[in-house]
Each structure stands twice: as C-alpha cells, then as structure tokens.
Image 1: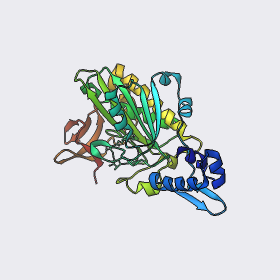
Image 2: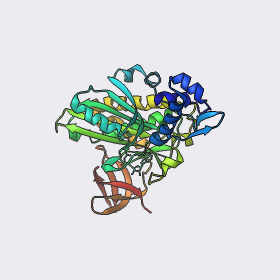
Image 3: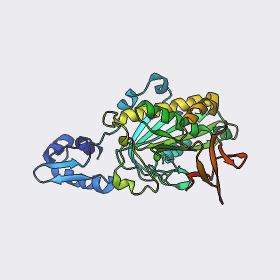
Image 4: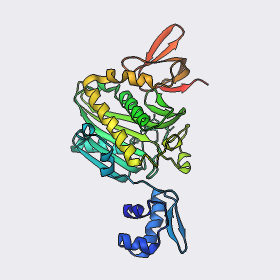
Length: 324
Ligand code: BT5
C-alpha cells in the first residue's frame, strides 16, 4: 500500500492505468487498494471518472535518507538504527517491547500513523497518517531511575529550541511536558523508563508533534490544539526535515543529560516557560490546589506560591491548568 501512497503523494490526479503500470498490479487491484487506503488508513481520496484518483491533500512521506540529511554528524553518530513504520499501535510501545529482545541504544522509530498513540496515564495521542511526527528513541542510560525524572523537561526544552530555529514563533513550554503554540498544545513528550534504581536504565523517549493536523481527526482531541502549519511555512520545511531537526535535538539532549542532568537545560526551560506568574490550579491525586505558578526548581519540580509559602510539587498525578 505504501507504493500506492507514494504514487498519489503529490496530491494530483493519477489514472488507474498509470498507477497499475507504476506499481505492477492490475487496475482492479488498484481500485481495491484505494478502498483499503480509505478504510484502513482513513485517507481521503477522490476518484473522478476519466481522471483517476487523487489524495485530498498532498502527503510528504518519511524517508530515512531525508531525515538523516537534516541532521549533523554530532547527532547522527548517536543513532544505531532508524526504522520508519507505516502503521503501528504506538512507537513507544514498540520500542519498549523490543528492549527486552535486545536492541542497541540509539534505536529510533518513526511512524506514519499510530492506532493507539499514547499520552501519560493511559491518555490518547491522536496520530493520523502522514501528517505529523510520531517518534520514539531508545536510550540506554547509566543513570538511576530517580535521576531520570528531569529528562522529559530537558528534552522538551531542546525541542522547543529546535522548532524556534525552524522559524516557529509563539512557542513555549507548559510544565511538565507540553509544548504550546499560541497557548494550544502542538507537541507532547512521553518518557518511559525501566531498570535498576541506581542504574543502568532503559529509556524510551517519545514525542508527537503536529505539523498539519486534519480537522476531522482533531475532533478526537479534548483540549485546544495547534499545528506548525498555523505559524510557519511547512511546505518549505519538509516533514522529513522537521523530523530530522526534532530527532537531532532529542538525541543531543539525551547525551547532554547523561553527563550533566537537568542543570544544563534549566536556563533554556525557564526561558521558554509560558506560565510564570500566572494563577493556576494543580490537580493532585485527590484534590485541587491553587496558587501562583513560580516556575521550576533545580530538580524540575513545579513551584507553587500559596500565600507566603513556595511549595514544590513533583510529577505524577499533577496536571496544570490556568485558573478559570
Ligand atoms: C503527552 O501526554 O502529551 C505525550 C504524548 C506523546 C506522544 C508520542 S507520539 C510518539 C510516541 N508514541 C506514543 O504512543 N506516544 C509518544 P499527555 O500530557 O498525557 O497529553 C495527552 C493529552 O493531549 C490528551 O488527553 C489530549 O487532550 C491531548 N492530545 C491528544 N492528541 C493530541 C494531539 N495530536 N495534539 C495535541 N494534543 C493532543
């Protein structure tokens, strides 16, 4: 089916005869596969008598070569393997499963679509085909589990810097792991770790970035969302190029964290913190607490000013909302 998508990727009309010649299947097989693309991958495809088939929107498919071209040697040598999978439940789940079967640190997995993309605590990550970035990296860390709690903060800060370099404005961070544009969520990070309390640990770091989210898929997102195409020219910045830039920043932040922990990313995180000084509510396991958000401490804990007290709140069952 990928070859068929490649034929249609430019968003122009292609006749059944042309496609069947190109991928070496009969015209009736082309017709059947078009049906499958619509049904299984949720792609919108127009078929017009006498003209053929065309995708409602062009698609920039991911390729390993193009992703690598967008990266520098410094990050490329941290990669042991890159896989691009068309259709998968979740790139994080995939790598978590592969860890027990033995993969090398620096194993990277991209997907064109996720059928069960995951956020934290069982939440869903909406992941339609061919439009956004869904990426996970496996990293073998020498640090202990407790030392890794600040890693998703460090990675989030580095991704924001990379997207800013690509020309994306009005972008910043919401504790602990959300990237927002114009106050709406454009990307999220999911860190999963297993291993020994004092190290080593297996780390799978996943990120989803919306590049061009179709409205029809976005209906499943239950909070304000944004995509990069709203604030930058994403046809100039090809999906492969953005994927390479995001992957590079993730890999370099993993490497840097290994030697200096969160300390090296604190300045960057604080510069991009969107909530400083705002009245917020924190949802804890069993209650809400309210106060003024005062940024993060050196361990990455959220600081909430309640009256004259400055109280640190650590990850876990906390979610941050602007106080309504
Ligand atoms: C996150 O969780 O933000 C982490 C998302 C990580 C996704 C990547 S994709 C590659 C890798 N493989 C995976 O399976 N996951 C990772 P959390 O903070 O729990 O936020 C989840 C919430 O974000 C949902 O409950 C929705 O409200 C919202 N959401 C879901 N899909 C979204 C999207 N595409 N864009 C913006 N917001 C979304």
